[in-house]
Image 1 (cartoon, rainbow, N blue to C red):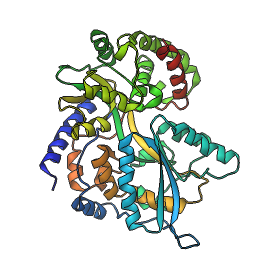
Image 2 (image 1 turned 180 degrees about the horizontal axis):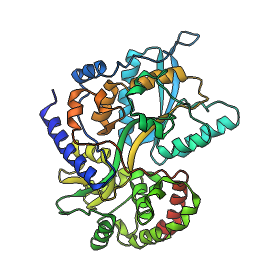
Image 3 (image 1 turned 120 degrees about the horizontal axis):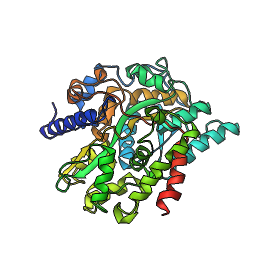
Image 4 (image 1 turned 180 degrees about the vertical axis):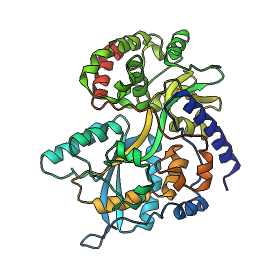
Length: 410
């Protein structure tokens, strides 16, 4: 049974998600939700529906000394990501005493690319995976790792619960990564100040100019919300398939978008101040220094729910939508701890663990809803899977560099 407060939250989030879905046109957009379903009843129901966390895969054995097999898990993101793994890892280790997960947390904007570079450098130097056995990141590093032949191909013979993940989602990444949760970038705004939020990017630009210094977006190199705003602006007038291409020739078509972003500089917060990290802009909304920002739906919904953001805060999506999609877990092909990692991944994809993802992250589960407890399935009624995704590979790094020179430096 879901508590009353949680049920009300679910109703609110389902309404928001439906609005986001409508805002994305033909692209079905799934919003985050807080099912508060990590209680024992839901977990037990989940384990019976979709396979227990202990099921399937090759169980890792203790090492030669009889100690648990320890592997290194590198992940990045905001504090809520760390909180999620700080919850899931002890749950896993309690029931899997033969495996120990060493968490290596890299706050967003401080180390994700160096982590990838470390894995690649280790491979080139013949030093295995560089001591990194599991890595969490976004789509761009999945696709780049495919080119560099870094990631292990994953299948349900080693990870039984992988069968609960949508097959098309896995096919999109050639089974090289596990999409264990999803989120989307949205507009978060103070409804006391903004009665009618912008519905399109052009309307948003007009609102920013009509409300000087009441809008902020973070430095795109330090968080996905700001990156999404910048990328959406650059690709606004380009063909739809451009957001799925990493062809460098597209860069010459960014000129108009960068000119727009440069022109907006005197209208954004502080007449050209760009906070660091996704939380930086959320803090401005919390303090009332701005009235609207781009934000990750999971972060905004979590902070609305726990009272960090004012109760007047609402979220909405523009058409076409800002980007969103899964966050992935990848196993370096040269890791020597793959049996232990697979055991952990099987747990992460269990309904029990996915209920925690929904509760802690306000995110859409990585496994199909039919594998989740009924209360969580009910909370997502009317919410379709899928986001408007941007898959531009290394071009994202070029965007960040040019943004620094063409926009931030002005």
